[in-house]
Length: 550
Image (tube, rainbow, N blue to C red):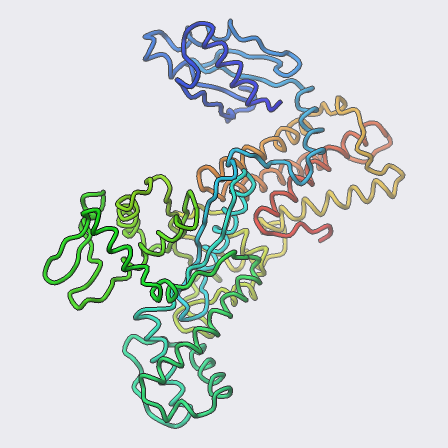
């Protein structure tokens, strides 16, 4: 049995025996002490009960401790510490048994079932199809994909979706920009739209379309030309975005198009639903949503005085389709300029009758590329944006994904290009991958020395401090996965993998794995194989390769 589950169960039984708390009345939190000497797990449950019982936390802790019936084969000791913490220390036998279980589970180690196959959708990137994906899109792609992997690992049924905003003003500007460049290539003058799309990629698209279509679009009226060029450009840009994301290791289950939503008049159905529920009113010729009554800072326009639906109305309709498709929980990853958009969307979905907790948004903050200590401001091809494809070319998929995953999404990220291109152990992803490659080499060397990995050994021989520390670090992995998924914090995983790699390297520095002592060699081979499994599993969760040689 998992030690944390076992201790939580024993604590609850002790509380019930003394009438201190009923089942489910109090949440028993177990944390890993920051100081190793304080044990393997600690709980503050006595402190939580102190106010209710009007007793000193240490007195409550001692009473709980006296009523605990702990299996000494699993728990070597328990003690009251500080203001009323109860610290627990697992036995060496427990850790050895857990290592055997790790080896047995292999690729499944770290997975859980608490998601209970709940149907969840995660929508991420969803960049406008008006140009190449940029470096913020690359960060969103990494975070979204890793979160989806984490959700799947803990038992949710996940669908990844990209929302294609292929309608509206920005798409019309794309067509007008394309038309100006297309006509320019034919030696004809057409004004470039004031807020149009610049960059070499627009010229490249215009050339490609001219080569494919010839000059036949030059003789039609401008509106027809804009519409046709919009369609042709969208096809090429979306295909390019799909190609870049696939190259980055990101797959989507669905590419949902705004144009299809509008064609089905889904936004008008939403307007009707909100009106029937009493959430709509008219003012100055426009139709307004009473979002301020549902937590938003002010009311929002859904239909302008000119009769045009706002983007917000269409976006509500899009999110409604998610629930209509059977998803029980929605997770969106949005850019930094959408922070103020969250409460109005929550208000709209609440107005439609959906639980507030079923819709969550994670903001992906800005990315700054740093090279030579300076911010890189311009792209080689795309004008003011720096392309995701350019970054992949510069540093590779593994490095980019690791760098994007290892920082909290709520904070802006300074992406150090010099460090990213460094192939030494100073680069964190190489440091982790090198640990995996080194273990593969150890296992190969053991076989060459006539001591191949067999899966059988006396693990009680693992007594050195570095061995036990490494073993304990391995067993943290399931908790890291669960907490990263529960709190939407994928950065926990690369942080842990760096810690695990450092713990392994310290162990390897102090102890030979393959030695003349055959029994000890077999035990240490099991320990390093367990380390290899966890490193490989963690890297796979990040969408990063686990090389066998470097």
